[in-house]
Image (tube, one colour):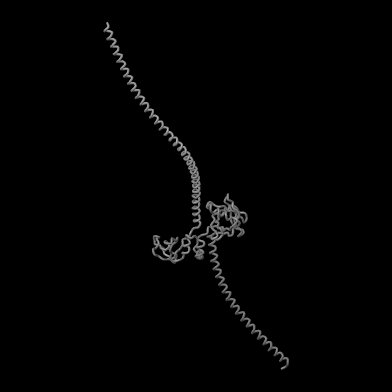
Length: 368
């Protein structure tokens, strides 16, 4: 064998080793990438499964959001009330988001103060869009907005943020189920918070009647535990289910009551003012009559003094009259006595004259 054959065989052996190493590395690389491909396929399958789950969850969430939006309507947050027109009961509000806001003229909106309830956040009333100028929307209070709600809305202009609802928010068991008892106590009236806390708990008809809760007792399927005649089943134990409230109707009824009470208050205030005026007039009349009484008392004292003087003078006159009557009586008696004496004297004189005349007559006859 020549040297060249040996060299050629050596090169072939070296090439074989190189090809063997390359083949081994290729097999190893193929195995490595095949294992990675399998792992990636598994991850892709898991990702697809997770993606499908997310798509299903998002679709359900999207359906919930669509239902919520359809039920609730559109909402505009962080709206800025800028100025209030007291005469026309209008307020200019800036709506920055979304842009454009999509609010149309004559749209009726329900306005809420965006502040927390603990800081005075509350329902401000029903307003209607009267004018639109870019992001600025002019709202006018409707006839359902009471004077108190308008005053609160006007007072918040330039100081607070508003939330505008296309539809009045509706009551929901699910929403309040997300809140703790302390959160419910913080935002709900003390008169009704017990209903929201008790919702979903075991109770009997007798318990909710004793606690004056507005709701019903249902079984696990949500069927009310009532007789065929619609009467509560005595002693039946189930789940307390709070009755949902129609906020729009409640606000409307409350606003009507506020209007009636405001009218009554205005009437009572007017009556009070009239009573105050009457009392002032009566007081003046009392003072006048007291002055008159005082003056009359003085006149009465003068009259009493004059009457006393007249009585004294009358007594003096009476005494004098008595004395005069006594003197007259005495004078009459003396006159009577004197007249009797004169009559006796005249009778005696007549007798003497008669005797003298008879005597003279007798003496004359004798002489003849």
